[in-house]
Image 1: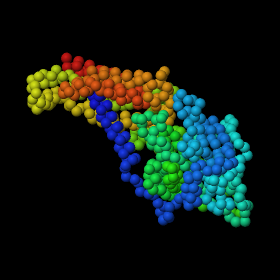
Image 2: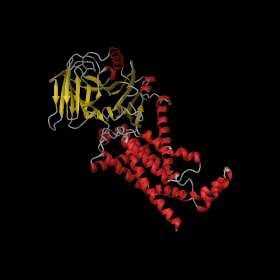
Image 3: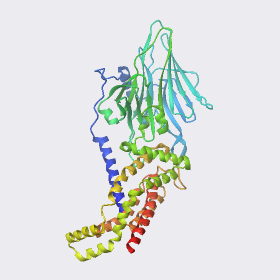
Image 4: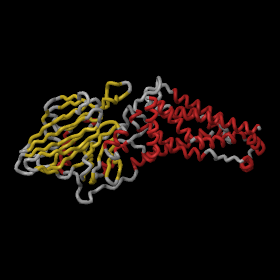
Length: 539
């Protein structure tokens, strides 16, 4: 019953861990509010705070000025001339569902029920520094990427003696968007302003219809400071108290399952970050720069970036330090990252994430072969002792104390440790939970097909074939394992293959595939060791 015991221990720990995480999110202690060491007052710009509150009450505000449509090989975006910001972004390589290949995920949207937009602007005198409510001018209404050339979308704003060209740059195959503010000052006075950017969104519904009820992932704010490589700030914490901090470099983001929108100010300056809750469950996170200065007759350019797209780990770690941590494996990150690397290598070899899971399972099983072999030998010895244990049971009848004393004596004489299979199981559990989070968190596996009817490894098996196979493999393992000494426990254990079949029927197919392959390898290993032990006993 070693493998069934493994399942019980694993599922107990996994479910307990998930419940603990949920409790921490909902009821756990809230982190202290961050304050700038150099300022006693909150760092949130008063202009942005006042405008944000008024725009939240007014909805989306004026739509005057129209939209500029931008299409690259991976993105379709709309830039509103009222504000000069990204209002919608569709991820062309990521359909919302397997059966809707022509309908891409819309990560950014200005629809009131699922508001999620960018806002950038300049903080200074209104006549020389446009905020994200000012009207910009564009040369064209549509821009399309041609070939391998970067696509540039310039917008123009003119004030009192100042011309500002705000240029969006889209690179081929990239989800990183660069924004240059070119300031030309022809006025008699120096131009000064701070550049700010922020993300604004509504809190998502508790459960979307395409979510798996057995998988709870984080949606909220994430950020990086010089002294904190990665920190999550749930929307509930922002509701309780706004937060303000300053740091050299840093970034802030709003993340959800598989996708991210990140604001990336320059790394070589001190940036002032803030969060704020607005009415109607709308939230802000952003930053503003130190004061920029352009002398009379000068032209200067100030640059910032967004990343708006999938949480591709090999891309994120090149975009900004620590951004890859938004693929959140939690406390198992040190183990999960090598597992993901192994899956990647096998996917490159086979061109199929399903076969990559199979091959990774074989490698993990091989790495833990000595431990699992020790466990199976212990079980095989216990199985060989079944006739003697049955004789003791008949001899002592209902006297359980004498039966257990005699049983312990038998274990000592035969040099069998009844708990010999437990330690190897406990050692392996972090690896298996890490693999679980790799399969749940990695967008690379999203909607990845395997064989035939398995068209999406992150969704449940539509015909429940893999859960049924898992139940069969568990039943076979049961037959190869010694039954519990307690007859009541033995009867309960017989129900486990059916119970776990039902339980795993709604898990992602990739996870169930792992369990089927692992069980199949365990059956072969357990059968071989049983044969060796029983052959040695006959000799």
